[in-house]
Every structure is written in C-alpha cells, then in structure tokens.
Image 1 (cartoon, rainbow, N blue to C red):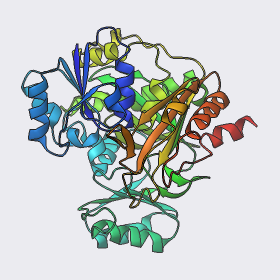
Image 2: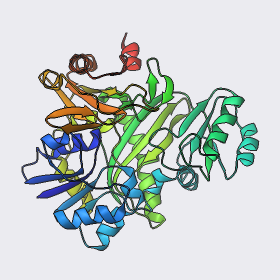
Image 3: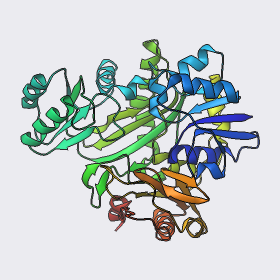
Amino acid sequence: MKVLVIGAGGREHAAIWALRKSPRVSEIVCAPGNGGIAAIARCVPVNQKDLSDLLRIVAEEAPDLTIVGPELPLSLGLVDELRRRGLAVFGPTQAAAMLETSKSFAKRFMQRHNIPTANYAVCCSQQEALESLHLFHLPVVVKADGLASGKGVLICETRQEAEKAIADLFDGRLLGAPESLVVIEEFLTGEEISFLLLSDGKHVAPLAPAQDHKRWGEGDTGPNTGGMGVYSTDAMVDDAMREWILHHIAQPTIDGMAAEDTPFTGVLYVGLMMTARGPMVLEYNARFGDPETQAILVRLESDLLDAIEACVAGRLCEAEFRWKPGASACVIAASKGYPGSYINGYRITGLDAAAQVPGVEVFHAGTSLVDGQYLTNGGRVLAVTAAGDSLEAALKRAYEGIEKIQFEGIYYRRDIGHRALKKKS
C-alpha cells in the first residue's frame, strides 16, 4: 500500500515510524514533512492551510490511504472532500472535528450527553465574560473557543489575571486574531491523563494512556505550551477505571456524535482530570496528540496500519492491539523563547549519538534539512523518546539521549514524570 500522511510534526514522524513496520506498506509520502521525516519517507511540499493545495497533493500522489495528522486540515474539511471523491482517508469530518475546533461546541455537546466536565460559561462579548466571572471561584480557566496550538488556555489565579486574559482574547492580542467566543470554566484539580482511542464511528478501542506536561517550566510552572514531555505506564489507569472511562465518557461521546448525525471516525483524544468527583473531561482533540503519540506508539507492538484500516472500514471490533509492557517517556527539546517568539535556523548536533542510546527514538518536530545539516525550524524541535521495563528506565534513556543533542538555546524540562516518581518514593 502507498500511504500519504499529512503533517509536519513529531506526531507525524512517530506515525510514519510505526507505519513503516507494517509489511503491507510499500511507500510512505509525507506532506509537507520535516527534516527528520525526510530520512524515512518521501516529503513533498504542501500548504496545510490551503484546502485546494491539500487536494492537489492527494490527486497527484494517488495514495491507497491518506492519514490526516494535524487539526487544521481537519477543520478545513479535507476528510469530507476526500470521502466525496471515494478515497480512503483516516480522520474525522469537519463537523465531527468540532469537538476540538470549537470549545463551546464541545462543552455544550458534553452537557447534552451527560458527559462529566467542568462547569462553564460561553461568552459572546468581553462584557458578558466579565459578568460571568462572578459565577466562578478562583482560580478560573479562560479558553479561546477556536484552535490555538495549545496556547489558548489560561489558568488565572486572580480576577485581574482573568480580566486581562478575557480582554487579550477578545481583542486579538493573545492569539493574533480576535475571538468571537470565549469559554470560562471551573478550575479542576487532580491528576491529568491523556486518554486516546480509535473509533470507526460506532466502536471504540483505547490506546495506552499517557500524561502530558503542558507547562513550560519545571514543577509545572510558566505558560501553557503544546506539550513539553509525556510518559506512559499501565499503572496510570487500572482495568476498572479504564472500563469506567470507556462506559461513561468514550462510548457516550462516540454514540452522541452518531446520534447527532456527525459520526466520529479517527482518533479521539480525551483530556481527563482525575478529580475527587471522578474523571472529568478537560478537552477533546480530534486527532493524535503531540507529544503523546510519540510515547504511545513506541509501546505499540501490533500493526498500526491494520488498526487504521479497521477504523476506515467500520470494523474496529476486529482489530488486534498488542502493547509492550512497562513504560515509555518523551522529552521535548524546544527553542529558546518558546512558546513565545523564537529564532529558527540553528544547527543541530548529536542526533546520531542520541539515536545510538539503546531504546531511544528521536522524532523530529520542528526541523529542516539544508545541505545535509539539520536546522531548528519550530518552537518544539525534537521529541526524544524511549521505552523501558519501568518508568525510571524509560526516563533514564530519554534523558541520556537528549543530553547528547545540542543547538543554540536548547531548552528542555528535566522533571518529566516527576508526579509519578514522587508517588513511588
């Protein structure tokens, strides 16, 4: 089979790395890809913000299967257009992807279908948002309604912080364009879990659980990012809790979307807070998470292509999933200044040495390959990932790998997995 993967990040690099293991994959093309992906797949340029250009590349390449990685092409309706043409594509439709592309839609959907989530208010104006603040105890969460690359969620400790966040979202100072809707939410406390599952529109199949580290700084301080590191262990979610989440959150979400005539096919990422009241949904994503995908796929022993094909064909209940026991960990190497402004084009060294550490895979997130040299080309540059018999072993390998890598201004958190390690001690 010839497979086309849309995307340019660490998530797509990890997916292609896993797909290459399938004996039925003859060729993988990635559009547009990145420096690291170019080493294992043929990369072709495409504008991910332009639906017509995305359709052009699919027509030119004529793949047997297209896999849509990022959220933006989903929001443009790429899956809808490919299905209209009778082409095999993995990912949700534009309407189904609204679980991610509109926070207000997701919150109202959860309320309609009795899916546990934080109390909220959807606000159409700055004045309405300021008045709604009185309904919440501090701290409070202020969210952009639309896509914001992981930067549209602000945890506000004081009313002054909340008022500034609301103003910055409505006037466009925070994200570069003004929001027409802002969601205010109750602040939930507990352990955060990324619970990813595949769905064919009716059935669900859970993937290995993971825990992301959204904050930039060690000790979970500083601004929210797209994710600075992640780990995955079986101990995160026991069998009883997994069944509860499937029965009360995952399956009701898929059933609810089908009931509203927007069946969800693809990867559903459920961001959960494990509160004293039980698991509650923080957010949905309509695709593989990043960097969760990197940590999850290094634990997958069964054929990823088989699972994806089963989703597309509506026979997910027949798919087989086998997981490597133990744990995995992923540490993000970021550019200086991320998640704010940063400079691209710095030379990256030590990649070969990092890859030679046993059990380590270096997935490229924001790199380019110029004249045989890897250069930084994004805020999150690399995702150094490792599996191990235990979380300690996986973390040790990942950090041993990342310590061999250098570029100007490299930054990474040195405490990935700290909550799990503290529990053990």
